[in-house]
Length: 359
Image 1 (tube, rainbow, N blue to C red):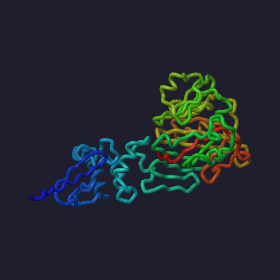
Image 2 (cartoon, one colour):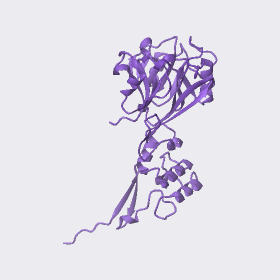
Image 3 (cartoon, one colour):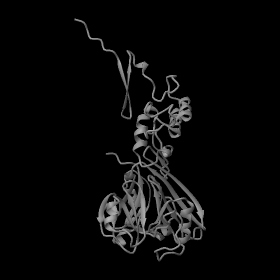
Image 4 (spheres, rainbow, N blue to C red):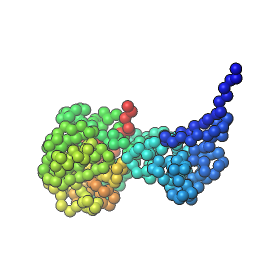
């Protein structure tokens, strides 16, 4: 009885696309992204992508293995990714493609992240395939500021932590609240919601208070990563829940108009120079947390007008003022990043950036 002889079939799988390669030896299978036929995916192939990408000569339909960002087009961004792979900055192209194509950030921002392990200095500077945080500092309007430039691929990386881990829990320091944030990287004080539970209070997608205050500017972080603000009296409950809110804050004021320019009128009684905390937004997946120290000889603090002006200068599309004064604190795993006035005060909530939780 003759034994059946199997003709070797190698199936190359890339992001859900199958390429059958007939032959008796697996070594005959082409390398992912190999455009020059040398059997390897290298900087030379990146050059071909850069030269031919976006033309009929190199289409994602015919060479989906070269569409590294999985957006249906082979372009300069794919060439950049190919170069990063060639330099050892990407270990697994399939995993890379899945992460980039499913994340909040625009694909062109892929190089803000790390694909070869976590980089963490415990002082707020952090990179993984899910999160990137860079701490910057400087001096503006005779005041010290600290800014966390934040990129996240999943909205779950932007989280709220309640004092005592419970809604309306007893207040405690921002450092203590942040210390209970699993995977926490950097955090700032929130809006001290417990002083005025006017609503809405939506945190991490859970609705704690659904009424909508009329006399406060309101910020809404949507589940799709977009941050939007509403001037007092303009947000309705129907509009709120149509936005699929993930986080809300009731404090303010909002600092920029719809064109990203500094406002000159603010619904606030705290306009003189003070310590400040701000949530900034560039685009889905790209945010900023900022504190400005104040009330000291080293750092005076900024007026609301100055704060809005600086937010415009930083290029935020949206900027929202959170609780300030002694509440303004920025912390990392190593402790406070700024120099909070009188050491800060106990608060009811912390806005934190964390590593993506594991299921």
